[in-house]
Structure formats: C-alpha cells, structure tokens
Image 1: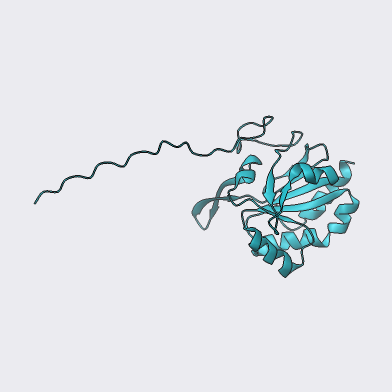
Image 2 (image 1 turned 135 degrees about the horizontal axis):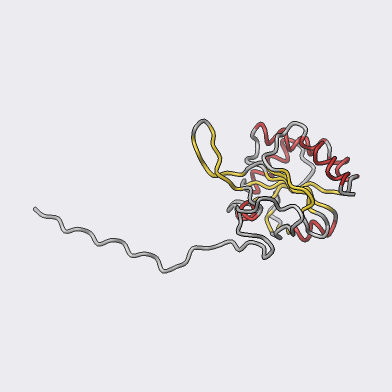
Length: 186
C-alpha cells in the first residue's frame, strides 16, 4: 500500500513583530555603551499592573534603572535588598531606584512583599526593553547556553541621558559603586 505524501504547510503571510530601537541608538543589542546617549524611552507595567514610562520617572529625579535575571533567586535577592537598604542614601544623592526583569507583575509583587522592597519593579515579559538596552544576551551556565538578562545598571539623568552604565554587575559592593557614580555626576 503506497502513501500519498502530505503537501508542505503554507508559510504565513504575516510579518513578525519588531521592536524599533530609539532613533539615536544603533540596532538593539549592538550598543557597546549607552553612556552619553539618550536612553530609549519605554512603558512597562509595575508590580501592580500600572504602566510606568521612563519619561515619567525622569521627570521626578535621576533614575537608577537596574536589570536583573529573576525574582527570588539568591543573587537577585541580595541585589534588591542592597538597593532597599541604601535607598535613603540614593534618594539623598538625587535618584530613585527601579528594577526590571522578565518576571510577571504578580511575581514582582510577591518578591516585593517577601523582602519588603521599597521601590518599584517593572515587568518586561517580552524582553523588548532589555533588548533596547543591550542587556538581553547569550549566557552560559553549567555548559548550557541560553538567552537571558545580563545583570546591568544604568544611571539616567533627568534629561534622559545615560550618565553611567554598569555591565556584568557583581552584586557585592555594587550599590556603593552606584552611590559613588551619583556623587561624581553632581
């Protein structure tokens, strides 16, 4: 008995969605450093589902925008708690703290409640903003390669420019580095 081959599936006529980088930036992921450039504006939901834009944040003060891999993990918890514990010093230096990861708003809310975090966490579930900032990269763990968020921090001035960028952040001592950078930029 012979079988009739099945026809190949038709290709979809729809175009894939794209994220358009900020006009002043090269293609996302290829930016060696954003320092001195305008930060790409964005709008993301916070832990309560409220949309927050970078433009709204910078209207109030400088912004310490930190990207981290995952809620409730040891390194990310240590980093978040360090920002929590130093928040008053950071505010005195003229800045507010905002964290970003791909976790959901519900996950962020649990993280905030469990560790009594005193700053907002934004949800970039599609990794569009992490790509714009060039922090969504190929990573390796135990010989396995995967795409993920590289721990990074950006100090963004009220004019929207990136004053300082920290890549491949080591958690211990990082907040002190951020404080020192804030003091130098005044």
